[in-house]
Image 1 (cartoon, rainbow, N blue to C red):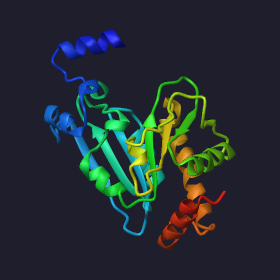
Image 2 (cartoon, rainbow, N blue to C red):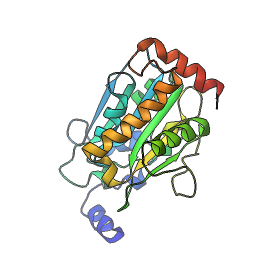
Image 3 (spheres, rainbow, N blue to C red):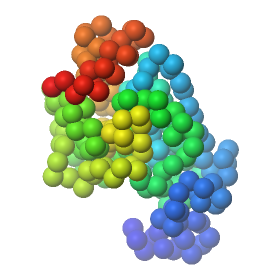
Image 4 (cartoon, one colour):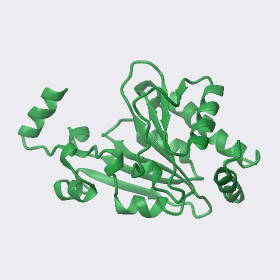
Length: 226
């Protein structure tokens, strides 16, 4: 992999590992050609689902994030649209991802879940982030749905304060890493349903689709009720 990436960079493709932030990415890439940004706001909700490596960067994360957000939660997608080399040219690491529209969206959100894809032949989910209470709730909900979910002992702790998942209103969020099989449509729907069920339960069982429940969700999460 490293040899291929080095060869690609030598062929004139920008290497995202050299970016210091989104401004560098935007200087090297063209919106509408190399990437696109999609935002869906739900003013009644203070929950945001973010996929900063969507589209061709980490396949399946656009679809998984959309399924989690559905029609209820705020949604942000940064999607690679290059014909090739999306990961190499566009994978801005999470603690450097400071795209302004994303920061504005999550600034008012008390629960932020970022969705990522990771390597792995098995079907596993790895949860990190500084909101350990929400992280653990989501992991429990995923396990209850028969999914393998780990909160420690993996390489995705996501505890850097500038990780995009931790830049919402509380300074704490959750990062979700899914292996390839769980980013396929049928499996992804199961992952999304389990996550949405956790938020619905926090809302007192009234369902994630009821707009009135969101402030109840936020109150529960901010109080860190176990």
